[in-house]
Amino acid sequence: AMALRLASGVQANLGDCAAREMLQHAARNVPELRSGGALLACSNKDDGLRLRRIGFDETGTSGVLAFTCVRSSMEMCSASHVALHVGRIEDCTSFFSLLGYAPTSTFMSNGARCAWLASQWSNLALELIEVPQLERRTSARPNATEVSPVLGLTHMCLDVTPLCTELTSLLDLLQARSLERFGRKIHVLTAPHQQMMGSLVAEVTLVRAPDGVRLELMRRAARLKHTMELDWAG
Image 1 (cartoon, rainbow, N blue to C red):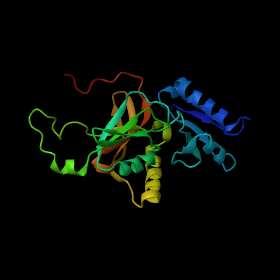
Image 2: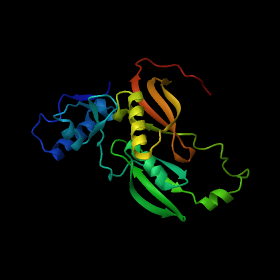
Image 3: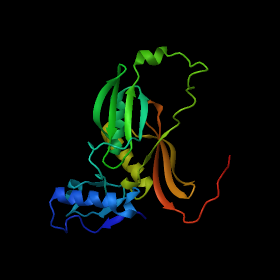
């Protein structure tokens, strides 16, 4: 397991800011964590509040917290991001807040409202582009030279390995958050299950985000040491 387990969040006589900076350094530079493994802490009544103050959050597993403030939300992400055409930016912003995403900037592009969302646990940013209702109603079917609506984005994937120790517990946690905030559960398209991706053993689940976006949540469980044969070759 790619995780650095902390026995206690309060043993070291450090201020919250210093403790957070040391944890950020560990999460970025410890080889086992550099690829996104969870930085975990065992929580009890005495240090649970302190751990949350310095950047830990629930994993869905009782007594186990994960460090989710690997980076500042205002720190520029890498160029990698997912751009989504959405019907209403506020709906998508609320939905992705379940996973710790928040707007870092809002802007206009070609007359459309846009928002850039980032989180403190992932390098993947989200760009939301609101398509006006009138344009959605009157858009003509694409001709042969345009991109077919059947092609393009089939789903987006978020690697949630830093957030949990098992995907089922995280999904239960997200469902509880959704019920508390919005009064309804997330629509699960595919229940959590194990999937092979080459030599990677992953847990995956597929849920529906606003505007019909298919969102895959993936947790990396293990990586096989031996070389896998190709499933197909061109």
